[in-house]
Image 1 (cartoon, rainbow, N blue to C red):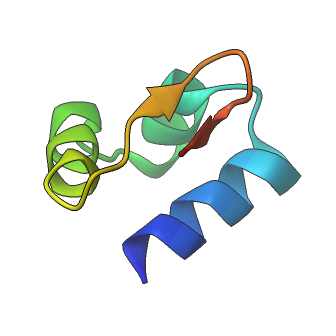
Image 2 (cartoon, helix red, strand yellow; image 1 turned 30 degrees about the horizontal axis):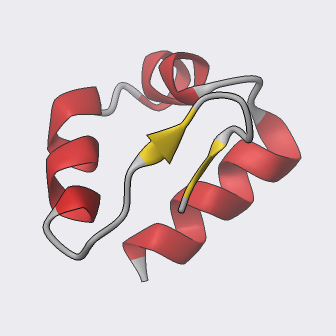
Length: 50
C-alpha cells in the first residue's frame, strides 16, 4: 500500500522525493528503507519507486 500511495503522490503532486518528504514532514530514509525491504528503489529520473 505504501508503494502505491508514494508513487501516486510523486506522479500527481511532487517534483521529487525530497519535495514530498518536506511537504508531508515524512522521514525520507524510513520510506526508502521500507520500500527497499520489498525490493523497490527510488529512481529520481522517473520520480518513482520501481
